[in-house]
Each structure stands twice: as C-alpha cells, then as structure tokens.
Length: 540
Image (tube, rainbow, N blue to C red; front, top):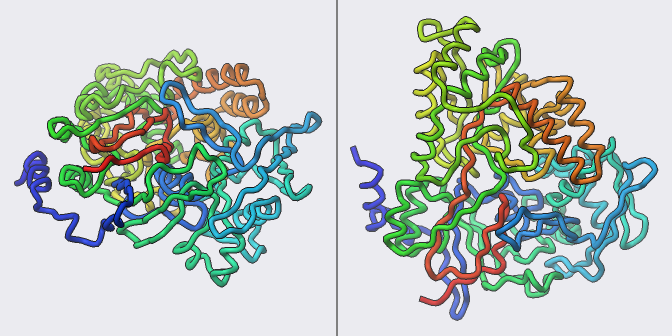
C-alpha cells in the first residue's frame, strides 16, 4: 500500500500531470495570472447566488458580484466589519424597527454596461423571493435562502433608494444583505431569459468578470478595470479557479508550478511545502468543525447526558497534532476569547472516565453502546481532513461506549441534507451531520442554530433543538441594536448552548493556505471570505 507521504512524492514528481489535462489555461503574453486550487469538486454556481457554501461566496460571489453591504477584508489584525457596498448608507425606522432604507451608490455599471439602480435591486430580490416573477430562479433561491429568510417586502422609493421591511425586528439585516448579490437584468434578457445560459456569461458589478467557464475544470476571471471601488481593482489580469477536492492533488499542483495558491493543505505536507520555500499562511477566523446533532425521538443524542459524554470522549489535543498544529481545541461554538463565549459551566475537555459515567447513567456502555449514524463528506469547503478526523473520533467514541456509523456523501449532497433538516424523510435514522460551520455573524453562529423558531428552512436548526431560555435570548439579540449590549445577550445564549451540549464541538481550524513564494500582496483576513484583488504573482 502506498503511504500518504509516498503518494505526495509521486504526485510532485509528476505521476499526476495536472498540466497534461485541460484544467489550467495558458497565460496570454504579458498577462499577470493568479491560479488558485479550491477544495470543491466543481465550479460554484456563477449566475448570481453561488453554490458550494462559503467557498463559493469567497471565490465567485464577492469576485463577480457586489451586495448592498460588504465585508471589509483589508485587515489581518481584527475581525472584519460590515461597510457600505452598493448602498452608500442605510437606516432603520425608529418607530417599528423593521423598515430599512438603503441609499444606493450612483454611477455603478454592470459588466455588460447596464446601470445599477433601485429597479435592479427590486428585480434581484424578486429573482430570489417571488415565484411568480419571470426572473425567479429556484436554484439561486435555494442558495440565497440563508440570507433572505427575514425579508417581508421591498419597494423602490426612487431611482437611488430602496426600502426593505423585515418580518420581525432584526438588527442583523446588514450582515445578511452582504451575501445577497446583484446581477444584471439586461444580461438575463440578452441570454433569452435562460439562467443556464447566463451562467456562462454572467454580469455583476464586482471587481472580476467571467471570461471562460469549463464545468468541473476551471473558471477564468479577468480584471474589471471600471469597478466602482478603485481600491479593489485587481492587481492581476486574470484569476484562474480550479476545483481540486483531493488535498494531495492540490499539493502536487502547487509543487509542480501548475497553480500558485492552494486552499487547505494537508498537515502532513507542511514540511515538504516549507522545504520547497512555499508560503504557509493562517489566521484565526470564525469557524468550527462540529457534529450538528438530532434531538428527535429516535436519537440517543436526545439525552443531554449522551451529548455531554460525546463531547468529553474526544481527544482534541490529538486531533490538533493530526492537523499539524493548525487548529485549536474547541470549548463551544466560538473561540474562548470571543466576546460571545460567556461563562458556561460545562467544561468541554477530554475526560473518558466522566464520559463513561454519563453514558452509564443514561443506560449505555461498551456492552450496550449508544448507536448513532452521522452524515459526512470526504471533502468540501472548510472540512479540513474529514476522513481521518471522523475515523479518529469514531475510535474515541468506541472506547467509551458510542458506536458511530457514517453515511458518506459528496459535499453538495451533504449540504442539501443539512438544509432538509433531521426531521425530513431522507434523514430518517440519521443523528448528526458533519458540516463545518462558521460564526461570522450572530445569526449563523448562534441565533439561527439555537432558536426553536429557526428550524430549517427558516434557519439553521437542523436537529430540532429547543430550550425556552435560548429562544428568549435569541429574540432579545435580534431586537438589540447596540453592539455592546447585543454581545452580552449573545454571550448568555452561548452559555446555554454549551451547558446543554447542543452540538458536539471538535476544533477550530486556523484556515491555512499555501502559496508560491512569487505570490505577493495577500492579506489574510480573520474571515471565511478573502479578498484576492490585491494579490499579484511576480514573474519567474
């Protein structure tokens, strides 16, 4: 059997010739090209709302498109803030706290030359939320549902002003709006009102424009020299995005010079990458590798003692070593230094003895194991090393009296099952889903997963978790517009989530990526999202 290290050596020596396939385009004379190997298996949806989770937003969403608001990704030393995007400013009604007014940026053009204005905002919201609208697209609606669920109505005030009303008081709307992307109605008309055709020639307002799309092979983007934000006009002429779900293949592609940048290099390749003078960059960011679990009637994890035992059974320090030190043991959903951490009384740690005691109290043990079935994926956005990590945890569980069985799906299929909820027919008998998760805003990180009102598809509560105190705090956070006060409420909510062992939390990874020494100008933000517009590749 070939070892992983031997496989890396064979790959980098040319046993797998990436260049011999049509994966990578050749640079045109004098053109500066940045080539990135992504972890996904296919190019994210390009027509407006990208697929493939946060990686789709990172490489397609914020490159081809803009939202009314955006994340400021220009700093590495602090968490990103929401700043004006296609909207120059916004305000919320003092009377009902549900009506928001957005003043739009003037003079913005789509890639096809058409004008961005209030009509296009209304058209794009109807595209996602109004099934009777001619431009409604179910695929984009599904992808955007995480961000549009709170919207009740929208209307044009004048050419540069739109009004959006939420279903209930929601202080988090500016976060959501950042991931609702604006595409060109003119291009949709030009392509015969066919979204499949639009995908090959999309038109947004973003800093990059799609030049060529080869499904499952590559997307080539070129600089938009007329982007409204002069600070974000790309420093490279061309950006080539290549789907490479296999970590070894990504490493081989970087070492052989076929790409300039790879996402999520495997830990056991780090030494070889360093020896070859590759840049290894990482930064803390709001991300957790968990099991989102079911507490429905058929789930052993319905018992809080079993949930706590599962959290105590995992040797997280061993996993950190497995990941080459590019992770830290989790104590809950958020990092211990995060303002939302709070003061939970349940200390998540490695404690086999206490795990076995709790399982015995719940009626389980090595001779009568708690049997759980978990949906996992072999790769995907932010999944790190899912196969080896899941096998490691499976052995940890077995030692205390939990038998874990896997159902292995590809990443998009897993995400579809996560969006369906534990209570859907296709998930019957499944007690968890291993979907890496982020907490870039309070909704996706805490409120949307902990509130019983936010069961999917109305939020992210996959497993039917319910706690009246958590519901109360989730509602309060949505109605708290002062940031400092909101942080206090969220800290109380996180305390309840941890003390209830709402999920099985494993590790926070440090978002590593590896680059050629010729890559310059990259600033790794403390975010899932990254801005590649400042990046350039020096000539060899």
